Length: 455
Image 1 (cartoon, one colour):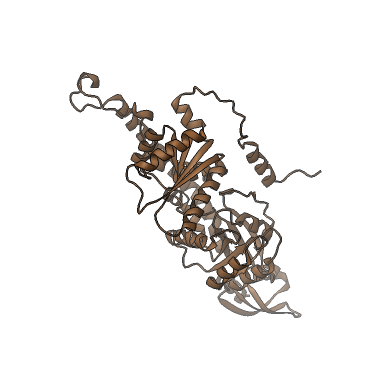
Image 2 (tube, rainbow, N blue to C red):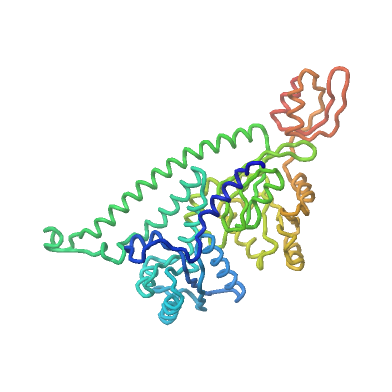
């Protein structure tokens, strides 16, 4: 029996940590700090519908449910409210808060997850009214990233994003550490003297700032390594193709299908975060690289975009983007729009793009036709069954950048190394074997053309 691959071991490890419903070993009389660290189990979802259709609002809440389940939670109930804009004090309004508190008590939930990024005041007010922990969409996504990051760079990027998020939300749990003391209570510092709670928060803030500075230095060093590898590929004139798209659209499955990379595949949001690059070649022998990237999602937290900027910039610097779309999703066009928003933010909107409509084996043919009507440069594939893969490879070959210089030379048989470079990085139009060498007419990169013409 063969040993499982790296992806299989990682998937087995991740599934072994799943929460089993009904089997609890933790004590009920835990302290509040422990409660906040350990118990993210039974949740109620809350969404505010401010624009778009009912279907858009329901799709957003459904996505929040998948995010919560990916984080290891059990969703018990969900509430949605129609408002022109979120309530500045409680996000959902005073009346809806009472309804939410009743739903929490009736279901026995220990956490509320809101479908939006909450201000510190909104978080505090909701927790005071519902008496349970409140988490917003940004904190939930950050938690998933923290669970799934494996590489040193990925872990540093996620930790930096978490610290950026927490900096504006520091306060004493229950308010007991955030009071201000004066007079004798302040140790003789007089009116307005700072009490121990505020001093503790300032200390925490300084520690966070120091940790963030250290993480940025580490990421700068890791980025230097990444840039060195990228420079080597550029020096050898190897085109790069990035696989980007919505989370759980099948990017890793597509990379595995195209290159046999063996990357972890799981039916979950943000299953893989660490980018993977594999070397492959076209049918005529041209070498290029395929890179899997982190998945996108609606309202991707700004902290993550900033922390993962060095990784996402690979998309902007690539020669071609394979924009993978989940054809079986109820709103694939909404996914495309969300991904292109991130493309614009990282400066990748001008990179040539092929829209890859994945999961053709389970997609609604009518939905696929609608996407094809809006996206003329698109290919329908199934990474699971292999359907449409040959058509995709042909489209990639056609869109890869062509070498700029045409050469007509005879390469001596002793210089087989140059002929090999022509096969890897050039396009051979004709090749004949003569007595004194190989006569080739080809398009090659400029530096290789200089070597050939000097023969």
